[in-house]
Image 1 (cartoon, rainbow, N blue to C red):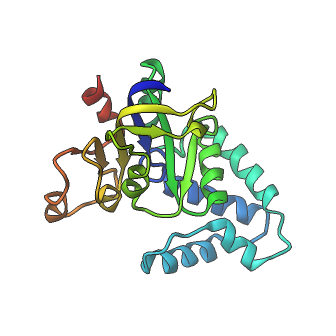
Image 2 (tube, rainbow, N blue to C red):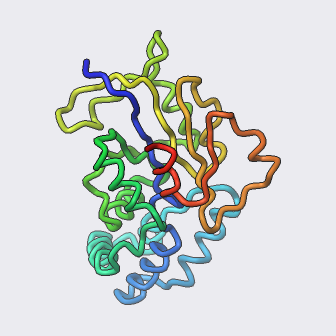
Length: 227
């Protein structure tokens, strides 16, 4: 099995992807196609997220109108997003991706939420060619821990590599904007908590982070730490 030093796991929403820009764009598309209203989408999102849930705009639209062709909505959404030239990405996201590629680092996008909605945002952001996985829980560390072998090395699944062969990594680096993502992070892993523009973590919460997790404001600050 091929060995690598580090495998990077990048969250999408609020780390790579600007969720607010994506959502605003979808509201415009929905209203233009006359398949819903932006206000209805906004209200539904606020209701779901206020209770700690994950809002899927596509599921909501399908529930409103079962006969709606979501492919038409998706195609126009992607088309408009690509015209915006990275506007649905967080500042510094492209810089980090380019750094990882230029320095031959292995990485993937690991996102949580409804698969269709997450993949639509990822494709619209121009990152559809990046290896990705949509997981059923915000607790990313628990998922990563499943890759550990008896020697505390990580067996990275074959799905993340072009040759469809698994690789053995000495460490995994998790990049996420939610503190809960780092719960029970394996000892042989480390991470970066991205504060972002909208996310404000209390000092008491940050004090509970493992010493292996660094806090950054923007995702491209990671580049200096990883050089």
